[in-house]
Structure formats: structure tokens, C-alpha cells
Length: 126
Image (cartoon, rainbow, N blue to C red; front, top):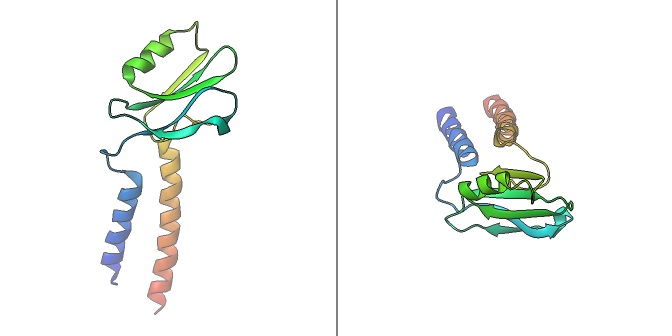
């Protein structure tokens, strides 16, 4: 495989990893009144849902669910029922620790670049 074809393949792989198909359904964690992260299950959201929500109640229990922008705004305004409301738009983003998509993507890019550097070094030895 010549160098240019190899580079095009690597760029294509990075695009697939960093920019998944917009048509795929959102997946969120789902649980009602859970006290542990392990109580949550991943679900495929309906097409009307474009956000994952994590709702912390005064009792300390957590609700995780699919929702839309209006649901997110309504829950954020309902301070009597929820201490904290976290809304996000990527798959399984309503878990325990918030992580930016760009941070995760940065790790993937660095890993791919290291792999490419190693591959190019061994490719040009021959």
C-alpha cells in the first residue's frame, strides 16, 4: 500500500470515529430512583428524543432518561423536585462522570496518530 493510500485510509477512519452517522438513534442510560450507577440500563431513545437527562432528586436518588430540549428546560425550572439537572446530546452521556466529546475524541486522535507514526516507521524501513 503506498503512503498516500495509507494516509487517506487513516483520515477516513478518524472521520468515522469522530463523526458518527447523524441518522443513528440516541442511546441513553435509563433508571428511575436509582441509588447506584449499576442500576442504569442503556436504552435506544425514540426519534423525538435528542437529549439524555440525569436528574438528581433531594432524596439523593437519580433519574436517568431520554428527553428533548423542552423536557430539559422544564426539569431545570422545577427546582422543587430536582437539585441538579444535566442534559447532554451524545450517546450514554448521562452517566456518572461528565466527559466532553472533544476530550474523548482527542484521546482517539492521539492514539491513531501514534499508531500511524509507528506504522510509517516500520513501512519505510523496507
